[in-house]
Image (cartoon, rainbow, N blue to C red; front, side, top):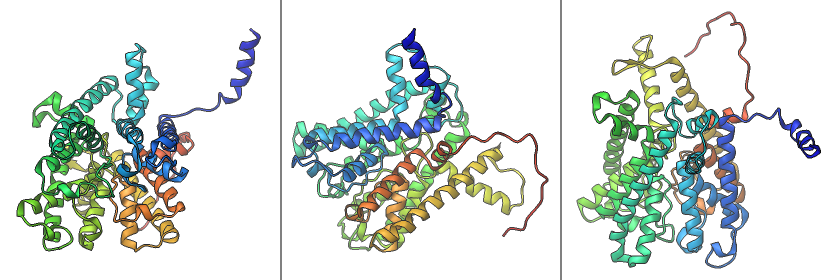
Length: 456
């Protein structure tokens, strides 16, 4: 009894602390990053048996958990098998979300998932409704492992000709998980990514299929499985599929046109097939996978601009992709078009978009743009690099893409910390982080008098 009273006295001061789903999500990712940092600092995680510095380990762990792919040390030549497995697990848990794994463990142990747990899943997977969250988690995990398994087998068979069976099996699994979770980590060595396979259709099509499927969002995949008819699909699914197709085609055509005669990229490839595959892969990979088959520092400025724009837009909501998301981008375009046409409601496919979603889309974009420019400004002070290189790095980190013009390994210590923070913001989401940090405001029982101001 005395012990019970003592515990109550200890706990009582902390009863006022209430953690909302956004805060739980942010803290969970921070804890995962912290654990990954400690594991990567172990001497037997690196081949030279000299542990990574805290900053480098933090950067690598953050990049893996936030499924980005930016690296300050080469993954293949720096890490032992243990270190590479740690990265692979961090990518898998970070991509699916730690809440997803927590719920699966609870289900296996026979635990009941309450309302709070379902709210956590909803926040983690960025879903609109709380209904069917447990069912969605089961589908997400099962589908992920099946698709990653298929990708791993295809890649292992292909690479068995280059590396032998045991090594190719691990390479296939590592790159399949990295691709599906849009992480962009590779084991090719010397920061080469997969540039040696630019004309290999098996590697290119397998990896691109994995990160496109992983990047469109689990809700979309589940909706396709359930409805199996274009007419029955939800408006969200239709918009994600249409925008993904349009952006992928547009990116491919633009890169093919802009880089065709560039000797440092497509111009240096001998066959038309290699050029088409090279243009296709670079056209779709900024949606946030991080691999590259072209020599990125050799890209023309116009291609860099296209890549930056695609990285900022990102992929679908509720998946492994980053960026502001394709639906956010589409709603913005639609809202602007509605204003230009002087219409009151934003309509598409015989459906009206709620005004609160339009406000949220504008908020996400403004927030994201502000974060990008603030970090860009800070890096102009801490780093000695051209503005286009810095902007490319910043958007790549924010969009959790992982592409770089060569700046990442050369970052200063403050630069590594700043980019690590930006990767975290990009993975958790700028609005989610804002909600986690902000105090909950009570609704006012009244409204102020409306008054117009001049804009434009």
